Amino acid sequence: MTDLVASELLKLRTTRTFFGLVGAALGLILLITVLTASLVPFDPGDTPFIDLIAVSPLAGIFALVLGILAISTEFRHGTVTPSLLTVPNRTRWAVSKLIANGVAGLLLGLAAALIPALLILLIFAVRGVDSSADAGDVVNVVLGSAVGAGLFAALGVGLGALIRNQAGAIVAALVWLFFLEGVLGVIPGLDEVIPKYGPAAAWSAVSSIDAADDQLGQLSAGLVLAVYALLFLAAGIAMLQRRDVAANSS
Amino acid sequence: MGHAIEVAGLSKTFGATTAVQDLSFTVDQGRIVGFLGPNGAGKTTTLRMVLGLVRPTAGTATINGVAYVGLDDPVRTVGAVLDGGALHPGRSGRNHLRSYARASGIGDDRVEELLAMVGLTDAANRRAGGYSLGMRQRLGLATALLGDPKILILDEPANGLDPQGIRWLRDFLRHLANQGCAILVSSHGLAEISQMVDDVVVIDRGRSIAQAPLEQLMASAGGGMRVRGPDVARLAELLRAEGATVSGDGDLVVGDRTGEQIGRLVAEHQLVISELTPVGASLEEVFLRLTQSEAGGPS
Image 1 (cartoon, each protein chain N blue to C red):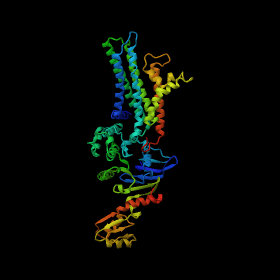
Image 2: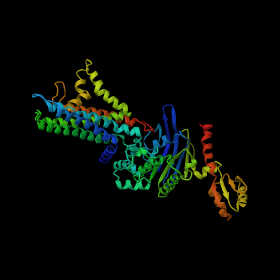
Image 3: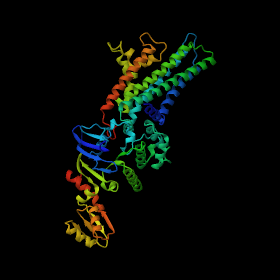
Image 4: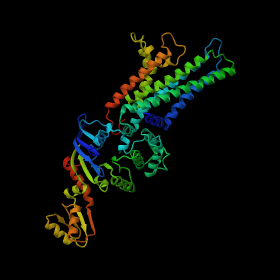
């Protein structure tokens, strides 16, 4: 399994897509946090650190896309054929991708929270702004963001195995996160469940240190996200096992 | 242990379409077997079933007696190139090979060795999306050879290769077969691989229509052997006396004897000949006749 994960990590870092996604995530988050930290006037009583670092979990979206691409790209370019010749056990193949992409997502989430956190605190120190955050807040938000992105990447791997069409899988995921979950969440009967336990809600809660009353705590949110990741992995593997890998399949 | 490759009663249907029907054949060590049939005959589907990528509707396909997905070390047992070697267009040839090497615990030294062997060292750092068809085939072959397997399965390996490339491939496969490899090579044209293979399995519409050593197939299908030389008149008499079909005056074309049978006759009577070859043009004819008799015309 170590060899397989090493192989998947090498595959990840030998295409431009990976660096594009990581660069875009870090660039966007740093741009927003640094500009805001430097230019916006803050009043006493504000919670500027917590407000600004709330941008960091956005890295989870990029991690999710990264995860979706892991298996769907193999089908798109037909490399699924040599890959499954190397690793005929499709479950092991999918699990090795889940581990590699989960680790990559975790590191991306870590970088996307730690770097801006340090920059925000540095800029506040220079400006003399009170961050109104203690060390525990910083650690919790950084870990939460990292775990959220790692689990979203893992969830994406399962989703990409389930829906092999890249564009379809990415659109489906984004539509759910930014639209459907919100809409379903106001339907009576579902309004108690979805806004608390839905994937977007759990993702939001895992990196949130000023959780609203109806939100899950960080740890529970992480566990809920992990359950989603496992469910999608199981469904994706079941689909992979049944599927004939024919020529030019896409 | 069993045969290197054994296909027994293999069938596959996709919905209402029958792609492969009750197909059986074997490939043994040291032999190069040509797997022939027109496009759409079911060759690729058969190879994919042998390699565990497509699930058979009925029958079995085994490697050394075991299903591919049950092999302990597939990469060091079987090497295969399908689809002309699939690759990610954004990854370099070298990284492509390294990623597959790493999955099997194979070192980068072996990667460099194979890049040199298939002549891709200079192009190894270029994005593989820019490779020519022939370069893709060679990268695919290098991937298949990473684990130095004793069984090779190649789907249309001659596609995209120039004449030098085909010649290189032929010599290379013969070299491997001489070392004891079992090799299964598919092709839609007999002429393309006639110089490569020992045996042929011809399929059409998913069914086997001929299986024999190439030479025997050629002889039985009436393609004929051409004989040239100073003593051909005498040879013609001897052959006719044995009941063989002989035509031509200057050059003989012998219809129903293998090259070996003719050779033995030549040796026995101490004749001098300068050439003994299968009639080239008829290779294609044999193939077309075999496949069209089933189809009732070009499809």
